[in-house]
Length: 261
Image (cartoon, rainbow, N blue to C red):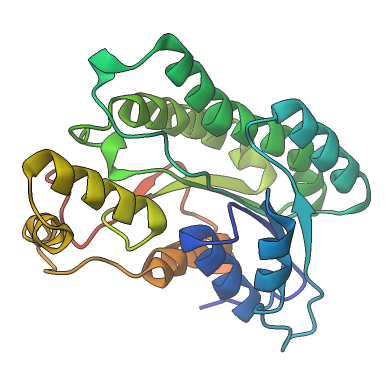
């Protein structure tokens, strides 16, 4: 099985924490050159020091904020002029929790921009390089809510579904060029966002954080919450030559929680 990413170049978004950071670490371990993208330069510099260079890759970063798509487009287009990128990991923090009926229209617009539009900007900037290399891996980190909506995440459920359908459409268009487009759907994964959701659930139910956390764990057949690197392992695999015939799919990494095929 060919899991070697030596000579391949990956961009990982939202890579200063959580699943994004873990994905950058795993891709570097497989030999990829990694470019980190996030808005906090100090955190980017710190993560850069944690990436393996054992296979000779020289990593770098781009400071960009997904709440400013025009700035993102300018920076990524400039970067793509002098760099061929083979792997793109689209990963952005989810919208705030809340009922769909309580959401403002601008909440949907902002989430649509942060997730779908910024993902699309990145793909458009990088896809020509992937076509010339005859190798591309576009991996979108979404949510199991694209299969079964999650209560209390109205805006997120809506936007994640849009991203999943955009991704499937791209997978059909780009497959002839040796480019695959897949989605990884994390279940409960111990990140800052999950801690925030548990805190919110605890407050609403009048429970402690640990009680609300145990309520969540009881819904997971595996009986535990995932570590970020377990999700990142699936992302890294989809980026490798070994996964070249996997295209247009949603891959739940959820310990068996999602109640559908």
